[in-house]
Image 1 (cartoon, rainbow, N blue to C red):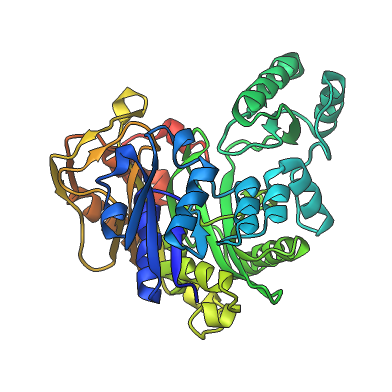
Image 2: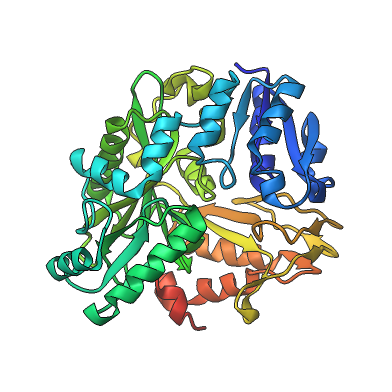
Length: 454
């Protein structure tokens, strides 16, 4: 086991990793920017070191400074969390060159899955279903027109090096194809430094379902069931649940087999997530693989009684899956997935009445929910000032119960007793979604939030 791990992140995920390390008896190092000097991870970690001013490019994204902090503190491994450097093959390579263990997959796998065109091709070769579309980058308008005519409109351009909704353009007819193509290329170039785009069939009112996998260095891969992530705004997830309301045992096994097949095809090691879209006929299609821990990992942890962050650390230290999961073989979890349901709401410091505008500022009153079946992952505290430089998520409320109806009622109760004053949050919006009839009936899709009513 490692003696000391540096956490190359901030906020609630940094705190989550620190807590897992402490339970494993591992010393922790928090890195922080000047604006995060009074953050909870800095206070709770065994050591903390400032790596630069507030802008992320000068601190959390500055690879030499992060590596220098690891060297100065004698850290043996680095956990990147999610965001920032978590999916940077350059950072993973730099860790290796400095003889630091990167807690995640190897750089080659990160690079492969980060290239969405290559990822599609690899999954297709492995027998994982992918959306109809281009097998390579789209090199011209003429080529785009030919592909779109073959698969039918609507279609969507996506950035080959992209993610997070950046570089995406939906095109509903041929006359808008060139504009969509040029705009997608321009945004891809501006955001990722890579103008390459590819084309896929666009599924309207689809569901977004992902499968959590864990793989060890001995070549063993298991899946931990699926998560429903269809409640999104502008391709950003807001509410997640496990299991999905539409996935039965046969479909869960099929999804799990596809996820495992895809992971094994690229010799994946550590935690990862294979993401799918599905149409009204429950046809599933691979869209991407996230080579890191996910924001929504707690719902899977609760349902499968697994600590995914601890498993990441133990696998990186050389342990196999059985040892990483506390000596329990979790190859078969279908019985557990029938026994419990979990739901997560991301709490963002945003004003939902002003187009979800971020609302940084000082927290003047705070009461977080508790009681049976409630977990809160958050780094905020009374008097804490939310800085304006980073993602607006300030916490996650996760609840569980034996039925989906029960878990929705528990989430409503938990959110109603939550008090966060001094800044606007997304809690009122979440309560509105929870009361929506379609959501309560499990009739959800990625466009539901556009029409949410009381």
